[in-house]
Length: 263
Image (cartoon, rainbow, N blue to C red):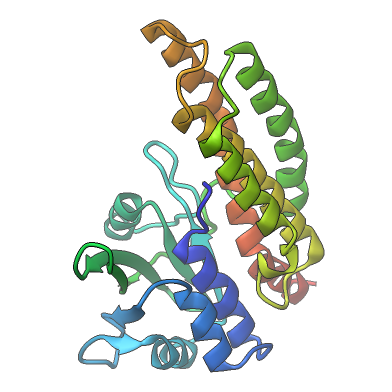
C-alpha cells in the first residue's frame, strides 16, 4: 500500500493523455517512473512488444477512451469484470488496467536485471481481452472518503489496542516519506482528476501506511500466535477499504466522464 501501483500511474497519466491534457512524452515519463522501460505486448495489429507511446496510440485507435485500475486480492476481485483468464492473471499480478470504450486490458509482468547494486526494472504489459461490464466492488469517491475516515479511526484504535510498535528508525523513515509525499499532493494524480480524488488517494495511502507499520515494524505487544492472528483479522477489513478507495480515486476520471455522457 505504501508504493504507488504501476497500474495507477499508467491509468492516471493514460487518461490525461487520452483527454489531451498532457503530451505523450510527459505521460510516458510519468508512467515509467523509476523503472528502466515499459513495453506492451499482445496489442491487436502489432507483431511484437511496443513502447508506451505507440501502445497508447494503438489503444486509442482501437476505441479505448479511458483507463480504469483493478487491485484484486484473493477473494476480492476489486475492479475486475472478467473473463476468467484476465482475472486470473490480474490476481497473480495483484493489479491491472482495464480499458473503457473498448474491451482490452493490461496486466504487468515485472523483471529485474543487472548486477547487485545496479538492478534495473523492466515491465511488460500483456494486452488481453476483457469483458465490458461494470468493475467489481468499486465505490464512488464520496463513499470511499466516508469509509476511509472510519477506517483510519479503526486502524488507529487497533494499533493502540494491540500495542503495535510505531516508533524507531524504520517507522520514522516511513512517516517522513509519507509526509514528503503528502506535501506534493498535486503530484499524486495526473491533470484532469477532481481535487476530491487527490484527497481520497492521499488518505488511502495514509491508511495503508498505518497498516504497513503494523505488519512490518515488529510485533509490539502481540507476542502470541492468537494475538498475531487477531491483529491480521482486525486490519484486513481496513486494508480492503484502503484498496477500494485507491481504485475509486484512480477510476474517478472515467467515472465522471461516464456520468456526464449519461446526462
